[in-house]
Amino acid sequence: MNIFHKILNKIDWKINVSRSQKELKNNKLLVLNYKDSLDYLIDSKCSLSRFGDGEFTLMLNGEFLSPRNNSLKFQQADPHLKNRLKNILKDRSVDQYNLKIAIPRTLVEIDRNNLVDTSIGFWQNYLHELFYKVYKLLRKDYTYLSSQISRFYLDDRNKNQAVIENNVNKWKQLWKDQDLLIIESVGSNLGKDSRLYEHASCIQRIECPNYNTFQYYNEILDAARKFGKDKLILISLGPTAAVLAYDLAKDGFRAIDTGYLELEYHFFLTKATAETTINGIKIGEVETIQNDPFPRSENYIENKEVIFRILEK
Image 1 (cartoon, rainbow, N blue to C red):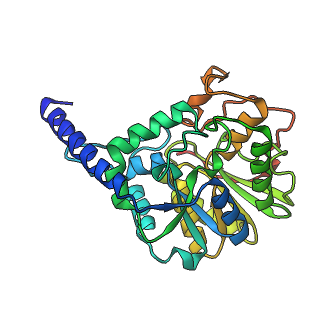
Image 2: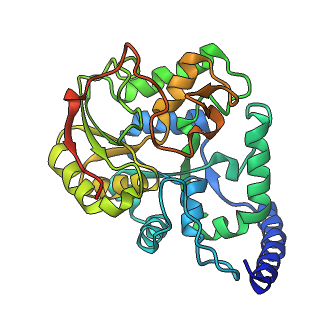
Protein backbone atom coordinates (compact mmCIF):
# COMPACT_ATOMS: atom_id res chain seq x y z
CA MET A 1 0.00 0.00 0.00
CA ASN A 2 1.53 3.32 -1.10
CA ILE A 3 1.39 6.54 0.93
CA PHE A 4 -1.59 7.89 -1.01
CA HIS A 5 -3.61 4.75 -0.35
CA LYS A 6 -2.63 4.84 3.32
CA ILE A 7 -3.99 8.39 3.55
CA LEU A 8 -7.25 7.33 1.86
CA ASN A 9 -7.51 4.35 4.18
CA LYS A 10 -7.15 6.61 7.21
CA ILE A 11 -9.81 8.98 5.88
CA ASP A 12 -12.08 5.99 5.25
CA TRP A 13 -11.59 4.79 8.80
CA LYS A 14 -12.41 8.17 10.35
CA ILE A 15 -15.51 8.67 8.20
CA ASN A 16 -16.83 5.16 8.78
CA VAL A 17 -16.24 5.19 12.53
CA SER A 18 -18.02 8.51 12.87
CA ARG A 19 -20.98 7.48 10.71
CA SER A 20 -21.15 4.02 12.28
CA GLN A 21 -21.51 5.48 15.76
CA LYS A 22 -24.32 7.72 14.52
CA GLU A 23 -26.19 4.89 12.80
CA LEU A 24 -25.77 2.58 15.81
CA LYS A 25 -27.64 5.11 17.95
CA ASN A 26 -30.53 5.04 15.47
CA ASN A 27 -30.34 1.37 14.56
CA LYS A 28 -33.66 0.31 13.01
CA LEU A 29 -32.68 -3.23 11.98
CA LEU A 30 -34.98 -6.05 13.05
CA VAL A 31 -33.30 -9.44 13.63
CA LEU A 32 -34.92 -12.32 15.49
CA ASN A 33 -32.93 -13.96 18.28
CA TYR A 34 -31.54 -17.48 18.06
CA LYS A 35 -34.58 -19.30 19.45
CA ASP A 36 -37.16 -17.37 17.44
CA SER A 37 -35.09 -17.70 14.25
CA LEU A 38 -34.80 -21.46 14.54
CA ASP A 39 -38.46 -21.82 15.48
CA TYR A 40 -39.46 -19.73 12.46
CA LEU A 41 -37.29 -21.88 10.17
CA ILE A 42 -38.96 -25.04 11.49
CA ASP A 43 -42.57 -23.80 11.60
CA SER A 44 -42.67 -21.89 8.31
CA LYS A 45 -40.81 -24.52 6.26
CA CYS A 46 -39.07 -21.64 4.51
CA SER A 47 -35.79 -21.55 2.61
CA LEU A 48 -32.85 -19.62 4.05
CA SER A 49 -30.06 -17.43 2.68
CA ARG A 50 -27.46 -16.47 5.30
CA PHE A 51 -25.32 -13.34 5.26
CA GLY A 52 -22.40 -13.05 7.68
CA ASP A 53 -19.23 -11.02 7.90
CA GLY A 54 -17.70 -13.01 5.01
CA GLU A 55 -20.50 -12.10 2.61
CA PHE A 56 -20.34 -8.46 3.72
CA THR A 57 -16.57 -8.45 3.15
CA LEU A 58 -17.10 -9.43 -0.48
CA MET A 59 -19.97 -6.95 -0.94
CA LEU A 60 -18.01 -4.00 0.45
CA ASN A 61 -15.19 -4.30 -2.08
CA GLY A 62 -15.09 -1.09 -4.12
CA GLU A 63 -17.20 0.81 -1.57
CA PHE A 64 -14.33 2.74 0.04
CA LEU A 65 -12.10 5.66 -0.97
CA SER A 66 -9.04 3.43 -0.72
CA PRO A 67 -8.88 0.47 -3.12
CA ARG A 68 -10.10 -2.73 -1.47
CA ASN A 69 -10.43 -6.07 -3.14
CA ASN A 70 -10.57 -8.37 -0.14
CA SER A 71 -10.98 -12.10 -0.65
CA LEU A 72 -11.86 -14.87 1.77
CA LYS A 73 -9.63 -17.86 2.47
CA PHE A 74 -11.70 -20.07 0.18
CA GLN A 75 -13.43 -17.55 -2.11
CA GLN A 76 -11.69 -14.87 -4.13
CA ALA A 77 -13.31 -11.49 -4.61
CA ASP A 78 -15.68 -11.72 -7.56
CA PRO A 79 -17.68 -8.74 -8.90
CA HIS A 80 -20.47 -11.01 -10.15
CA LEU A 81 -20.79 -12.72 -6.75
CA LYS A 82 -20.77 -9.30 -5.07
CA ASN A 83 -23.63 -8.09 -7.28
CA ARG A 84 -25.64 -11.27 -6.78
CA LEU A 85 -25.37 -10.94 -2.99
CA LYS A 86 -26.29 -7.24 -3.05
CA ASN A 87 -29.29 -7.86 -5.32
CA ILE A 88 -30.63 -10.58 -3.01
CA LEU A 89 -30.64 -8.09 -0.15
CA LYS A 90 -32.47 -5.58 -2.37
CA ASP A 91 -35.18 -8.03 -3.46
CA ARG A 92 -38.48 -7.10 -1.81
CA SER A 93 -40.22 -10.19 -3.17
CA VAL A 94 -38.40 -12.83 -1.13
CA ASP A 95 -41.55 -13.65 0.86
CA GLN A 96 -43.17 -14.78 -2.38
CA TYR A 97 -40.49 -17.47 -2.71
CA ASN A 98 -40.98 -18.54 0.93
CA LEU A 99 -37.40 -17.44 1.53
CA LYS A 100 -36.01 -15.71 4.60
CA ILE A 101 -32.80 -13.70 4.70
CA ALA A 102 -30.58 -14.06 7.75
CA ILE A 103 -27.97 -11.62 9.06
CA PRO A 104 -25.96 -11.61 12.30
CA ARG A 105 -28.06 -10.90 15.37
CA THR A 106 -24.97 -9.08 16.67
CA LEU A 107 -25.76 -6.22 14.28
CA VAL A 108 -28.52 -5.23 16.70
CA GLU A 109 -27.35 -6.70 20.01
CA ILE A 110 -24.07 -8.10 21.32
CA ASP A 111 -25.16 -10.56 23.98
CA ARG A 112 -22.39 -10.23 26.53
CA ASN A 113 -23.99 -12.78 28.84
CA ASN A 114 -23.90 -15.58 26.29
CA LEU A 115 -21.10 -14.85 23.80
CA VAL A 116 -17.45 -15.71 24.41
CA ASP A 117 -15.03 -12.80 24.79
CA THR A 118 -13.39 -13.35 21.39
CA SER A 119 -16.75 -13.07 19.64
CA ILE A 120 -17.69 -9.97 21.66
CA GLY A 121 -14.39 -8.32 20.77
CA PHE A 122 -14.71 -9.17 17.09
CA TRP A 123 -18.21 -7.71 16.77
CA GLN A 124 -17.40 -4.62 18.82
CA ASN A 125 -14.56 -3.79 16.42
CA TYR A 126 -16.65 -4.73 13.40
CA LEU A 127 -19.55 -2.48 14.34
CA HIS A 128 -17.20 0.32 15.34
CA GLU A 129 -15.69 0.53 11.87
CA LEU A 130 -18.06 -1.10 9.37
CA PHE A 131 -21.62 -0.83 10.68
CA TYR A 132 -22.33 2.25 8.56
CA LYS A 133 -21.39 0.45 5.35
CA VAL A 134 -23.29 -2.72 6.21
CA TYR A 135 -26.32 -0.80 7.45
CA LYS A 136 -26.74 0.82 4.03
CA LEU A 137 -27.10 -2.61 2.42
CA LEU A 138 -29.95 -3.73 4.64
CA ARG A 139 -33.68 -3.09 4.77
CA LYS A 140 -35.24 -1.38 7.77
CA ASP A 141 -38.76 -2.62 6.97
CA TYR A 142 -37.94 -6.33 7.05
CA THR A 143 -37.52 -8.83 9.86
CA TYR A 144 -34.38 -10.90 9.37
CA LEU A 145 -33.58 -14.24 10.93
CA SER A 146 -30.26 -14.65 12.74
CA SER A 147 -27.50 -16.03 10.55
CA GLN A 148 -25.83 -17.28 13.74
CA ILE A 149 -28.32 -20.12 14.27
CA SER A 150 -25.73 -22.58 12.95
CA ARG A 151 -23.25 -21.38 15.60
CA PHE A 152 -24.83 -23.02 18.63
CA TYR A 153 -21.70 -24.15 20.46
CA LEU A 154 -18.30 -22.53 19.91
CA ASP A 155 -19.39 -18.91 20.48
CA ASP A 156 -21.58 -19.85 23.45
CA ARG A 157 -20.04 -18.69 26.72
CA ASN A 158 -22.02 -20.98 29.01
CA LYS A 159 -22.05 -24.16 26.90
CA ASN A 160 -24.99 -25.50 28.84
CA GLN A 161 -25.38 -29.13 27.81
CA ALA A 162 -29.17 -29.18 28.03
CA VAL A 163 -29.61 -25.95 26.08
CA ILE A 164 -27.27 -27.03 23.30
CA GLU A 165 -28.84 -30.48 23.05
CA ASN A 166 -32.22 -28.79 22.72
CA ASN A 167 -30.89 -26.64 19.87
CA VAL A 168 -29.42 -29.70 18.13
CA ASN A 169 -32.73 -31.53 18.48
CA LYS A 170 -34.53 -28.57 16.92
CA TRP A 171 -32.22 -28.76 13.93
CA LYS A 172 -33.00 -32.47 13.67
CA GLN A 173 -36.71 -31.60 13.48
CA LEU A 174 -36.03 -29.79 10.22
CA TRP A 175 -35.17 -32.96 8.35
CA LYS A 176 -37.17 -35.54 10.28
CA ASP A 177 -38.60 -38.04 7.75
CA GLN A 178 -37.20 -35.89 4.92
CA ASP A 179 -35.13 -36.94 1.93
CA LEU A 180 -32.00 -34.78 2.03
CA LEU A 181 -29.82 -33.49 -0.77
CA ILE A 182 -26.64 -32.07 0.77
CA ILE A 183 -24.59 -29.80 -1.48
CA GLU A 184 -21.15 -29.32 0.02
CA SER A 185 -17.55 -28.51 -0.70
CA VAL A 186 -15.26 -31.51 -0.90
CA GLY A 187 -14.22 -32.31 2.65
CA SER A 188 -16.58 -29.84 4.35
CA ASN A 189 -17.64 -32.71 6.67
CA LEU A 190 -21.35 -32.03 6.13
CA GLY A 191 -23.52 -35.11 6.22
CA LYS A 192 -20.71 -37.53 7.06
CA ASP A 193 -21.76 -38.08 10.66
CA SER A 194 -24.96 -40.09 10.78
CA ARG A 195 -25.92 -38.95 14.30
CA LEU A 196 -26.94 -35.43 13.25
CA TYR A 197 -29.07 -36.75 10.37
CA GLU A 198 -30.37 -39.90 12.05
CA HIS A 199 -34.02 -38.85 11.64
CA ALA A 200 -33.75 -38.14 7.91
CA SER A 201 -35.26 -40.69 5.53
CA CYS A 202 -32.22 -40.72 3.26
CA ILE A 203 -29.19 -38.62 2.34
CA GLN A 204 -27.70 -37.90 -1.06
CA ARG A 205 -24.82 -35.55 -1.64
CA ILE A 206 -23.34 -33.39 -4.38
CA GLU A 207 -19.66 -32.56 -3.91
CA CYS A 208 -18.25 -29.29 -5.25
CA PRO A 209 -14.77 -27.76 -5.40
CA ASN A 210 -13.72 -26.26 -2.06
CA TYR A 211 -12.00 -23.18 -3.48
CA ASN A 212 -13.61 -20.42 -5.56
CA THR A 213 -16.84 -22.39 -5.57
CA PHE A 214 -18.76 -19.57 -7.26
CA GLN A 215 -16.71 -20.16 -10.41
CA TYR A 216 -18.72 -23.37 -10.85
CA TYR A 217 -22.06 -21.83 -10.00
CA ASN A 218 -24.02 -22.73 -13.14
CA GLU A 219 -22.96 -26.38 -12.91
CA ILE A 220 -23.91 -26.50 -9.23
CA LEU A 221 -27.32 -24.91 -9.88
CA ASP A 222 -28.06 -27.32 -12.73
CA ALA A 223 -27.14 -30.31 -10.56
CA ALA A 224 -29.27 -29.03 -7.66
CA ARG A 225 -32.26 -28.66 -9.96
CA LYS A 226 -31.70 -32.13 -11.42
CA PHE A 227 -31.30 -34.03 -8.16
CA GLY A 228 -33.24 -31.84 -5.70
CA LYS A 229 -36.82 -32.63 -6.66
CA ASP A 230 -38.95 -33.52 -3.59
CA LYS A 231 -35.94 -33.16 -1.30
CA LEU A 232 -34.89 -30.76 1.43
CA ILE A 233 -31.67 -29.20 0.16
CA LEU A 234 -28.93 -28.32 2.66
CA ILE A 235 -26.05 -26.20 1.36
CA SER A 236 -22.57 -25.64 2.77
CA LEU A 237 -20.66 -23.67 0.14
CA GLY A 238 -19.54 -20.43 1.79
CA PRO A 239 -20.99 -17.27 0.19
CA THR A 240 -22.11 -19.28 -2.84
CA ALA A 241 -24.69 -20.96 -0.61
CA ALA A 242 -26.62 -17.71 -0.06
CA VAL A 243 -27.04 -17.26 -3.81
CA LEU A 244 -27.86 -20.91 -4.47
CA ALA A 245 -30.53 -21.03 -1.74
CA TYR A 246 -32.09 -17.88 -3.21
CA ASP A 247 -32.21 -19.21 -6.78
CA LEU A 248 -33.54 -22.61 -5.70
CA ALA A 249 -36.25 -20.98 -3.57
CA LYS A 250 -37.36 -18.98 -6.61
CA ASP A 251 -37.59 -22.27 -8.50
CA GLY A 252 -39.87 -23.78 -5.84
CA PHE A 253 -37.33 -25.89 -3.94
CA ARG A 254 -36.77 -25.67 -0.19
CA ALA A 255 -33.08 -24.90 0.29
CA ILE A 256 -31.27 -23.98 3.51
CA ASP A 257 -27.85 -22.37 3.74
CA THR A 258 -26.56 -24.23 6.81
CA GLY A 259 -23.12 -22.65 7.14
CA TYR A 260 -20.81 -24.56 9.50
CA LEU A 261 -23.54 -26.53 11.22
CA GLU A 262 -21.76 -29.89 10.98
CA LEU A 263 -18.51 -28.42 12.32
CA GLU A 264 -20.37 -26.94 15.29
CA TYR A 265 -21.94 -30.32 15.95
CA HIS A 266 -18.51 -31.97 15.97
CA PHE A 267 -17.17 -29.30 18.34
CA PHE A 268 -20.11 -29.95 20.65
CA LEU A 269 -19.63 -33.71 20.65
CA THR A 270 -15.91 -33.40 21.42
CA LYS A 271 -16.36 -30.55 23.97
CA ALA A 272 -13.89 -28.50 21.98
CA THR A 273 -12.71 -24.96 22.76
CA ALA A 274 -11.27 -22.29 20.47
CA GLU A 275 -7.79 -23.41 21.57
CA THR A 276 -8.36 -27.08 20.82
CA THR A 277 -6.35 -28.31 17.83
CA ILE A 278 -7.31 -30.98 15.32
CA ASN A 279 -4.53 -32.11 13.02
CA GLY A 280 -2.59 -29.00 14.01
CA ILE A 281 -5.42 -26.57 13.22
CA LYS A 282 -6.86 -24.46 16.03
CA ILE A 283 -10.61 -24.84 16.17
CA GLY A 284 -10.94 -21.06 16.42
CA GLU A 285 -9.49 -20.95 12.89
CA VAL A 286 -11.37 -23.88 11.37
CA GLU A 287 -14.09 -21.66 9.93
CA THR A 288 -11.52 -19.99 7.69
CA ILE A 289 -11.04 -23.21 5.70
CA GLN A 290 -13.37 -25.64 3.97
CA ASN A 291 -11.19 -28.73 4.02
CA ASP A 292 -12.21 -31.30 6.59
CA PRO A 293 -9.73 -31.19 9.48
CA PHE A 294 -11.04 -34.38 11.03
CA PRO A 295 -9.91 -37.97 10.60
CA ARG A 296 -12.69 -40.35 9.63
CA SER A 297 -14.74 -41.49 12.60
CA GLU A 298 -16.68 -44.68 13.17
CA ASN A 299 -19.80 -42.73 12.19
CA TYR A 300 -18.40 -41.74 8.79
CA ILE A 301 -20.84 -42.18 5.91
CA GLU A 302 -19.17 -43.69 2.86
CA ASN A 303 -18.98 -42.03 -0.55
CA LYS A 304 -21.84 -44.15 -1.89
CA GLU A 305 -24.08 -41.23 -0.92
CA VAL A 306 -22.31 -38.93 -3.37
CA ILE A 307 -24.51 -38.97 -6.47
CA PHE A 308 -22.71 -36.22 -8.39
CA ARG A 309 -19.33 -34.53 -8.31
CA ILE A 310 -18.30 -31.24 -9.85
CA LEU A 311 -14.57 -31.43 -10.44
CA GLU A 312 -12.14 -28.56 -9.98
CA LYS A 313 -10.82 -27.21 -13.26
